[in-house]
Image 1 (spheres, helix red, strand yellow):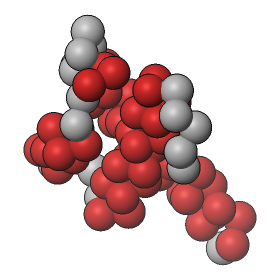
Image 2: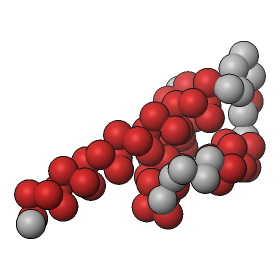
Image 3: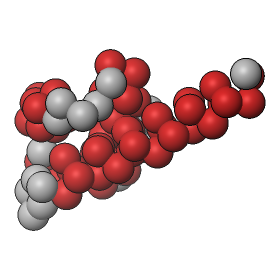
Image 4: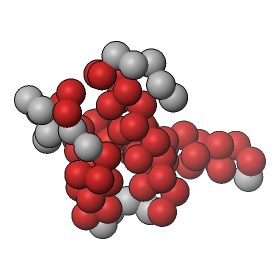
Length: 74
């Protein structure tokens, strides 16, 4: 069972990152000035995400935003 849960958790992470990338890319060309509330709203509108996937997606989008801004914050 633990192997299955591990795989499920990894799949959640992959799906969440894909959702985050989608929400982030939709904001281009304004990616450097995009605000997290816009990204969160786009992710929350994605009803196919579970609560855990939504949390992971928001975290991933935040990391992408910091990377694009070049501020290195985590």
